[in-house]
Every structure is written in structure tokens, then in C-alpha cells.
Image 1 (spheres, rainbow, N blue to C red):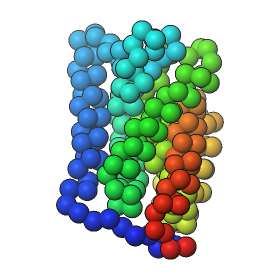
Image 2: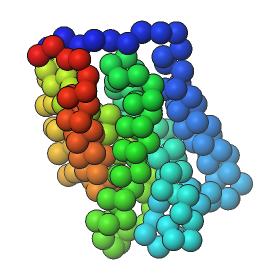
Image 3: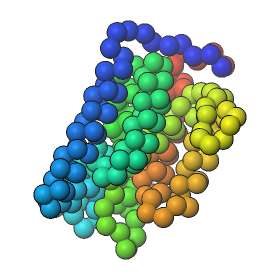
Length: 197
């Protein structure tokens, strides 16, 4: 399948802005932590705190406390986001990313069971990007460390989701919500983009 790409100056700007926001929040959290101030509690998404602090349905997706969690999400955001941005344009990319993160948060609120504290991270929004690309470009080849051979994108996305579901302290509910939203958005967009199958 070949895809019609959009071109234009500044197409990476929204992705860079998202990455900068995530990095600044990460720095702020860790500086605050050195002063024994726990601001994650006011940014992360929790069942018990959401109705008191409803903004957390947005802020949680920009919140990372661990460097490798931040790095993995930002690298995936960059690669998935830049590719989707070229196919669909800035407005659609941002809509998928932000709505995907919100839907992922709703899945967390509905499906997470005690003991459960806070969910943080951009993974749900990133899975939404992956879900869209899985539908639009399923045979796109990607490398997944440490596998030495390229995999079809849909295998990497579905396999990554299933693998992370088995890991402890991972919000599979958020990943599921983001992925399902991304797949649905991908089917919607596929009928509206000029794709040559």
C-alpha cells in the first residue's frame, strides 16, 4: 500500500511541543520530589481523586516520574507521531493523540480494580497513534529491540500490547482504551484518506 503524504514546514512542531511539555513536567516532578513535595498526586489519574481533581484526565498523560518510562514514550511518540502527522496532518494527529489519551483515562477509571493508586504516562495516547497506523499502514515494517528482523507494524503493536499486559504495575486498561480508540479512528480515517490499496 502506498500512502499520500502531506508536506509542509513545521510538521514536527506539534510533536516537539508535546515532547517538551512531557520533559518539563518530568523535571518539575523530580525537582519537587527533592524538596519532598509530591505533585504527582495532583497530576496522576486516580479513581479516588478524579472527581476532586478532574483535570487529571488530561494531566496524567503528560506525567512521568521514571526516566526510562519517559524515554520510551517520547521515542514512540516521535516515530509514530511524525509518521501519522505526515499522512493525516496536524489537526488529525493532535485529535487522535489527545482524545486517545482521554479515552485511555476513561478505561482506567472504569476498569481498574483495587489495589489501585495513580496512572501516569503517555502510553495510552501513544497506543492510540499505533492503533491508527495499524489500520492505515498494517504492513509497514518496524524494528523492535531486541528482535533483529523487521516486523509488520500490526504485529509490533498487538504484540507489544499483549506483552505489556503481562507486566506488573502497567496500566493495561489505559493501553487497551488507547489502542481500541486508535483502531476505530483508523477505520474512520481510512475511508476518508486517499489510500491506494
